[in-house]
Length: 459
Image (cartoon, rainbow, N blue to C red):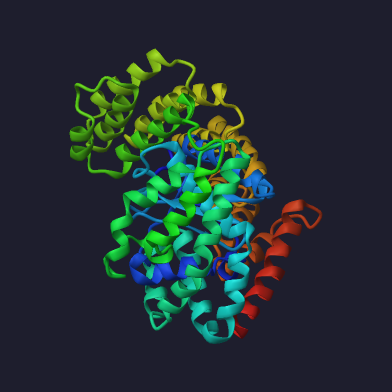
C-alpha cells in the first residue's frame, strides 16, 4: 500500500463548491471536521470498483463518472457528495463482516446519487445556509487536499449550522435510498441481505443520543420501521440467498488485512494476526505491522513468503518496494517496483512509486526515466497533484526551470491553492516558449484561477 499514508489525492478547486452536500455537512459538523486526507491504494481501489461498478450500472449511471474515494479516518462513516463522488472511511471498511454488507452500503449511497437527493437538498439549504456553505466548502476542500488542520479550523468556525434540520431532511430520503439500493442489488443478481445485516449490527445506535452515535448513523438515521420496510423488499428478491463468491470474500479479507496493518497500532495487529496465523491475510497484516514497528528484517521475511507463494501478485512486489523505500533504501526498492509494473503495467500509482524512488536517487538517467513515468501517470490521472509535485522536482534536477514552474502551477491548481498556482504559472510563462502546450496551459491556469478567485470573493 505504497500510498496508504503519504500520498493525498488533490482535486480541482471546483470541488470547493460542488462538495457541499447535506450528509457530508452533517457528518463533518458533529465531530468529523478533523478527518485526515484521502489515501490511494491501487489494490483497494480496484476491489471497490469491482464491488461498486455493477451497482452503478444497475442505477443507470456510468461507472467512469462516479468516483470512489478512501478517507484515512478511523470513524465508521460513508457518504456521497455532489459530482457523483462516494467516500468510505477506513473505519467502516474494516467493520464489514461480508462483501455483501459493503455492497449494500455502496448500493444505498449510489441510491442517493441516482435519486438526485443531493441536488434537491442543496436547493433547500441555499437561502438559509448560504454563508455557512461557502465556509464549509472551503474547509472541506482543504481537508481533501491534505490540509486537515486548516480545514478543521475553517469548519470549526461555522458550527452554528442547523445540523438537525439537515438530518431531518435526510430522513426523508433514507428509505428511498434503501429501496433503490435493494433494487440495484437485485438487478445485478446479488442479495440485499448484507445491508439489513449491517443495519442490524448497529441497530442499538437508534436509541443513542446524537453525539453518541457513529457518524454514519448521524447522517443516515436508523429506525426499526426503516429496517422492516427494507426487509420486506429484500425478502421478495429471487437473489436473497445468493452467497458471496469466494473471489469477493478473498478481495475483502485482503483489503481489511492491509488496512488493519496500516491503520492499527502494530501491537494491535500482532494480537489480531498472531504469528500462529500463517494465512495469506495474517502474513500480509504482519508484514506491514513489522515495517511500521521499524523491524525491517521481519517485514521482509513476511512479504517474501507471500511473494514466494504468489509470485504473480503485483501488490506483494509493490509492498516489498514500499517497505524498502520507506526504510531509506530507494535503490533496493526499485527491482520490486519494476516487477510490480511488469505484472500490472497500467497502474498509475505503481509508476508513481518507481518515479519517486528514482528522483530520490538523483541519478541523471533515473531522473529522465522518472519524467517519462510521471507523464504516463498524469495522462491517466491529470489531477494527481502529488505526481505534478514529483514532476516539478524531476524538472528541477534537469535544470528545466520553466517546466518545473509549470508543474508546480499544476500541483497547486489541483489542490485548490489558486493564488500560488497563478504565481507559478505566471513565472512559467516568462520562461516557456509561447507556442508550447505548457505555455498555453499555464495561461489557462492564470485566467481560470483569477475568475474563480473573483467568484469566491463574491460568495
